[in-house]
Image (cartoon, rainbow, N blue to C red; front, side, top):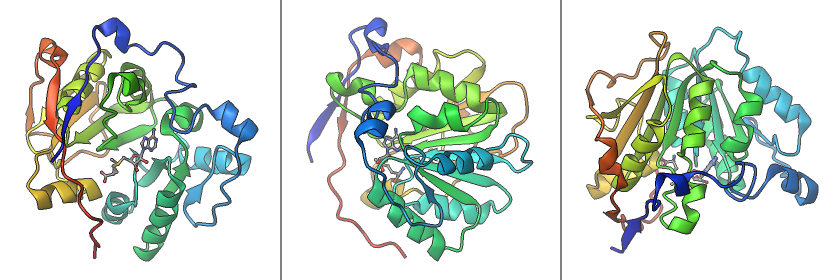
Length: 282
Ligand SMILES: C[S@@+](CC[C@H](N)C(=O)[O-])C[C@H]1O[C@@H](n2cnc3c(N)ncnc32)[C@H](O)[C@@H]1O
């Protein structure tokens, strides 16, 4: 096992992005640059859309997220091979699921998986969620936002690439419906503490840590690997004020109060899980 150090900023000031999110913090670079110099992905899947290059796909994704649609809307960032998505969509056939993923190969695998599982309430977008969420999703229209096992971006110089940040927290809060929930799961304790601290910079939601980090939801691929290895996981939840929420989490009642903010400022070391060979599932 290799030891990795989850780095924290020297001060709150240095944690602030120096430039807008539309720059080097995005996976794959800025949207404008990619549109200028990149190539269409030419995806053929049933569920997957390419909103960077295809205007029709932007419209299809917008329509899927329409705030006037009475079905609850769940969004997952970083669905990888859609193991969670397949199970969640099957268990919630009356809700809409929208997933974001930055890697084309994962989108293709996920598409095949959802077809195999007979899912018909999902759409997938091949794009960094942070760059297009605001464009695709109206304010106060998301019931649950899942961020499962985001890449830790261990080093200080890569911190700006971390999915959970104070600007992401503000965006998530804006997009959540009253009573809506943002759920972050991680196997990096330092990331859980970091996420708590970043989420707490936003007013108008309650941030807690779940006693059951599984949250009563289907397992993600990473979560399953952690369980098989006997490795711990953590879950942080932010619930927006103003309503009961339409998609309650089974484990939401068993929450612990947050760590004090000052607890999040120390540098935390973490035993990185050893690489696990791709296991075959089902
Ligand atoms: C460590 S994996 C976790 C995968 C899955 N959520 C799980 O729990 O098994 C992180 C995934 O998020 C994707 N990802 C990272 N940043 C992203 C972003 N900004 N928008 C969409 N996907 C992202 C990566 O390509 C990768 O598939």
